Image 1 (cartoon, one colour):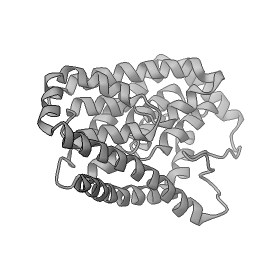
Image 2 (tube, rainbow, N blue to C red):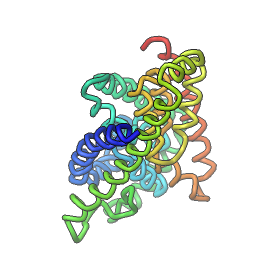
Image 3 (cartoon, helix red, strand yellow):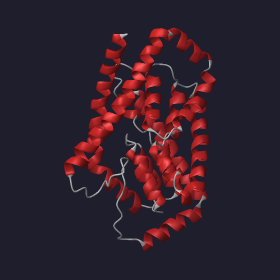
Image 4 (cartoon, helix red, strand yellow):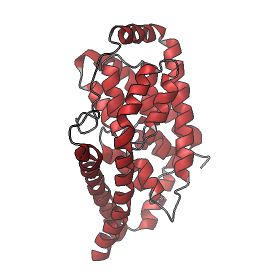
Length: 289
């Protein structure tokens, strides 16, 4: 049993380093990307999708913050949320001896789906686009701080070491804790139940995995994306289910929208679109990979 603990600790330590490096890099560009989204309205859904691919839960929070301020259209926020994989990508790419290359397939599919849905939504909701354009015209030049995932200002931090070192380190340690707990739980499960029995159960119920993954992905916490990625790495979740779970996994961004009364109705519509798109995409590729 002690070996299970050591294996979980070792695997989690590798992921900690990868996640920390991603977060340090993002700390230098997060504010610039937020400003870019506001200024390029025509390409906003495409830019939003690219921004959402950044493997950090702060991307969805920044997008939600801008949407609440009427700086983004619904198509753009949908593109950000669909492209967002929270903390899953660093974990997938850390699987050096496994299917790390499937991270690129995931990125490609999420980018295409996010851009398509984003532009389709803006085309259907033309009035919403006009409202955002009018608002941006009136507040042009206004200095509005952009909020990060830890509720800190991502621009103009008086302490650069906090912005580029402390915040990334704290967030990475949180992810490390999630990964370690999940790795240890899987290890204990395999130890007492047996990997073969678990694999047989999931294989027999493969058709339900996209739905289950979608429901897990709806949990507004970094832990849900970690759980999905780790389950896939362990060979317990098919790629179609992973795609479905990570398409709807907008992390804390969706929670930010849902807790705001003024936008709650719109947030529920966004959640419905995310759910339907995620489920459809998951089942579409379930039997391909």
